[in-house]
Image (cartoon, rainbow over all chains, first blue to last red; front, side):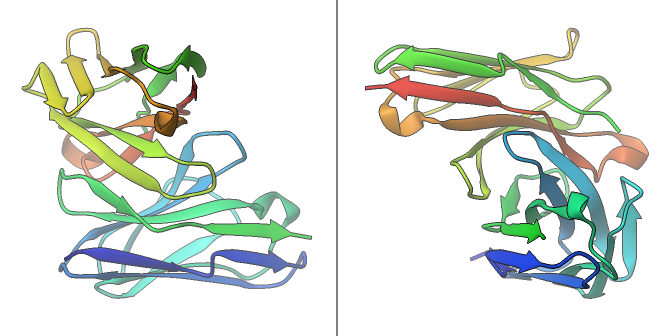
Length: 111
Length: 113
């Protein structure tokens, strides 16, 4: 069956430190992959999506970057975190024009 | 990029009542989906309706889609306290935007026992 793993669940990082959040998918090949950010009590903001290895589309210019080194691995990174990077980050995958499956999310607090 | 917009932003009802949430979007879509999110968790897919469909049912859920008005509604019948959650609509576009899955801001539903 198709599953998605996202870690860590919570993370507290100081301003200026680097960030690496990882997401892996099992049970399917060539998924579309997504990173979203959700501010408290708000909707989901699409940050990046990828339709294949090395293919990353950015929706919002910001302090973050994404990479897809393997077919089922999607990484969200930052070289230097800002306070405004705090939020709830969600990774998801889908096949073309089908439902999306979400990870459990990472609560990032930048202090 | 296009985005669904749900309304109302918040809805409070008594257990057993029906809950209706609406979603509007801006451009052509392949399909529209509804998701549920319990506080602090990931989203769970509820139902997908394709652009050539007008209505779809799944258990206590009923979704309608009006592509001429670019709107959809989600009806939850005979609500239960366990239905308390945030509900989001999501759309994927056509053409170059077809891989983007964009979400609205959600409707926060509270079902009072």
